[in-house]
Image 1 (cartoon, rainbow, N blue to C red):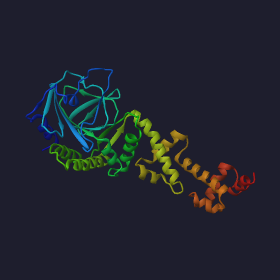
Image 2 (tube, one colour):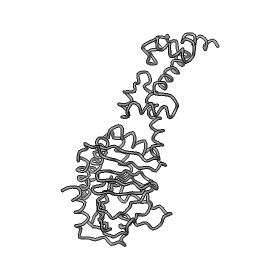
Image 3 (spheres, rainbow, N blue to C red):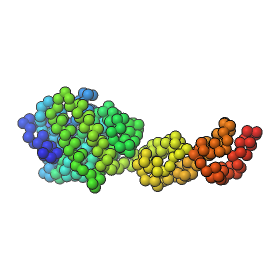
Image 4 (cartoon, one colour):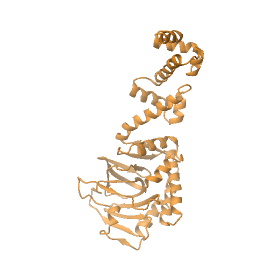
Length: 350
């Protein structure tokens, strides 16, 4: 059974039909009732439940069929909606990962309408205001609500590649006041492993028992691992601006820690960006190239060692990462217009 068929099965083949007046229906689909209000959706399960799933099936004749898992009673909720209808503007106090099982689906996030295609995902941070758009087209969407504590555990478990861990950890855990989302797109050669894992997760939520929270947490870890390998993600405009500073601070902190033997190839391996990215980022923030930035760090350390230690010039040259003493002299004289020995004598006797 494919993931699409499983979604159809749980949405259409339930013996219990939820009424539109039932309180649960507002979680499944709350139509827009005000352009000036924002609804906050809270995590609907106890904290030990790591994740829940909301399944939507939209049809071209303006019908929606939905269900929620886990649930003590199997149910489906069906309703109709006029063209261009949207849900009420809302936020979550948890994280939401939406996967487009089939068709296309649009969301209005931070005032901008974004269309997601089959196989793509949208990861929405807490407190990020958005609306779901209902268009006269067929689509199946799975929304996974992820508890904050479990997401924190996933990000600190190092199951995902370092690139995505750094982005998500910095963006979604450290920047509490920044509203943001991530748009994931599969690589051209991506396998269907993600969809199979999502199906396994949904099946576990359907057949929920005492072991399910532990199994679901493991599956979520696998999902983020797959996303880090088989998917690219793009950042919102707001997040790009903020992340540039976060990345600059993280990259320059790493350079300062390893300044004696740092190479741009080492940065590429550590942060998973192309070499020219580091030049552009550092140039945009401090006005110098990567090479000039590293040289400045080394020369400042040389200045400190000359004044605060009795190390020889050769020892200082090696200590700051220059095995070629002549090259160190050349850089030092270009900066200070005197030799290192003259600098030491002048400053210590001034």
